[in-house]
Image 1 (cartoon, rainbow, N blue to C red):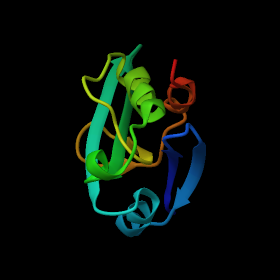
Image 2: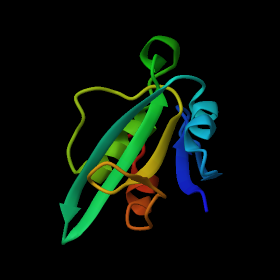
Image 3: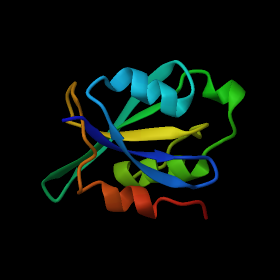
Length: 117
């Protein structure tokens, strides 16, 4: 079955990913090391727009700022972040509770629109 995901690199490159059921190792390879998960979302017109964002845990020290991924998160949550994400960032779906899901279609336009200005 696996997971559908999107990786946004610091240069703005967006790559759709088909990840295996053994998700953690696959995501670790995409971000380059130990994982840190964050969850962002909101309800818009009765639809949950939510993502699980995965970054390399030490990316702040070792990777450039990723304004493109930061703007994508801001588009999903409908509000600014007070910090920047760093390094390659993997976006997955999130059920609003505790489960990571494939990236839902409803969220994709927000991730594609989030770009540096």
